[in-house]
Figure 1 (cartoon, helix red, strand yellow):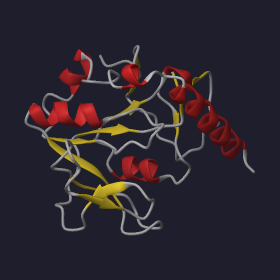
Figure 2 (tube, rainbow, N blue to C red):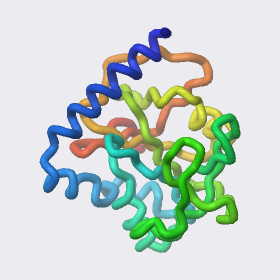
Figure 3 (cartoon, rainbow, N blue to C red):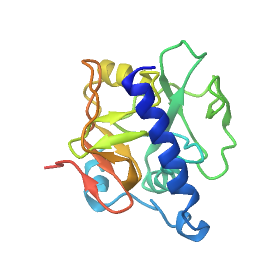
Length: 191
């Protein structure tokens, strides 16, 4: 097992313990809307890329609702199969997920006939991050490849404070994020 694989296993367990320790009432109040600097950054975006969070990932649904109320189109990752490149397709219903179906990773994604979109700003899930915007994800490299193909798109991570690390094992294909937003602060320089 590689250093990154060992770290992912540790980070998944740490994240799960942290989230399970949060009272349900607190979980419902976390990440309700983007902080003002993030809202300003996304103000000119017509399309906002998000993710449909797993039970232990930092929630993105309230951001989706807020951005939709601001007149933004929403997009979620979409895969034809587990080996296919990641695309984004339109997500029209962040309130009830009526336009989503189970994808090849067992997570919800837009239907195959939803319009393909390229976000103007993308919110990215993570397992761990550093204060300077480096991240470690699930290990498939989907976001790194998508960001390499779309370098004009600012990428912002959503994470729990417990996921911050002093350093990460980095490889040439790893893409740093512009910023990481946690329930308590923003890591990164948005100026």
